[in-house]
Image (tube, rainbow, N blue to C red; front, top):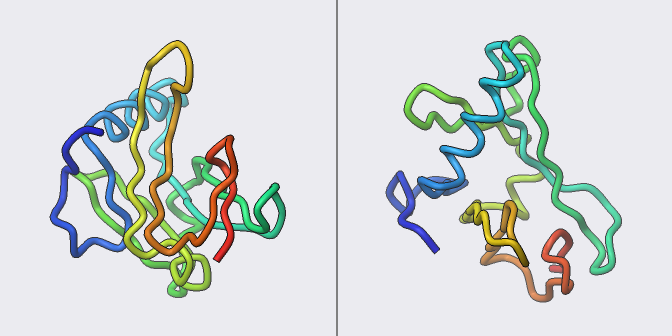
Length: 118
């Protein structure tokens, strides 16, 4: 894993490689967007991660906002209960590449790494 860009006290920690990838994807969208990270019911372990770009105007007072070099990562407070301390990383490896979630709150994770249980 690569070094995190912010100290550990952040609610969601983003590595340099993940931030570079997110900024590259955002640039292709051609809009000023934030990244919303959260959880939803489902997946092979009970809860699955969700992550998508969203217009900044959709940020609400109920959201926690983490600023990374001017780029905003947003998480609703309910999801943050399950994600606090999550590290988001990115690998461009041919096998097992893509975004990876390391969640200290997960008691189990599935083989695909996209869902977890608490």
